[in-house]
Length: 346
Image (cartoon, rainbow, N blue to C red; front, side):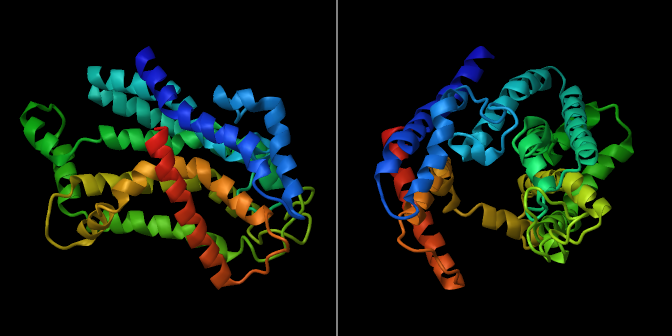
């Protein structure tokens, strides 16, 4: 187990340390202009707490500050990822080797515990994840956004997908199982007719992606001292609607992604159908090299963005075409640098 944990850290640290050093010592010298002074806002946290990044605790320390006030602020995800890996992955694998059924039950229990904890904190702390909701979303950013007890839902859902029995496993072991015939029949029917569950998973993902257009961003953005309930700002959702979305949207998202992945892994048919189409798209070979470069792109892209934007001589007037061109340019440059980082470092 210790070797597995050490290898996980060693997989991340070389490129992570290189990008962190580049962010702190090289990027500030790569441009100038009327907006370049804002690099100081990024450097100040690093002078005080760069070591928290290397120990993967920068999502907790310094305590009580927003995510963007941390050193190399987008690296909160790496801290959460390593923490969840240490807490769950090797231990659940060992448990799964001893008892498949018990490992699945423990994973579901921990996933449900994360959902309950998130719901309780959302209710008691008046959290909101709608970015226009001022003090409510600022509090969530400090207390919940980058914390493992909130983010564990998707992580555990992914682990459960790996544990989820496939149809051929059920068929091979059917005669050995002591479970009722109804359970085996349910699993067989579910995988034989997968259009409805796939449509349900995709529908939930689409609804969660676009539900905020129903009123989350109708009014002006609240300041961080204002609340939608007491000021004419932020979302027009009721407190109950905000609670439900903040507390359970991640749970629904994680279940939908898990179901989608399971159906794609289960589907062996070459015939048409919704699951076959989704699996075909997700199986395109173009995703393979991009996946290999994604870790570097994740670390590098904010560096590219801020060098690009803070080096300008005037404010940018938003135009959709300009935005799309910036997006394409930054994406291409990011993956080019990620390629060289993968070759030279990873």
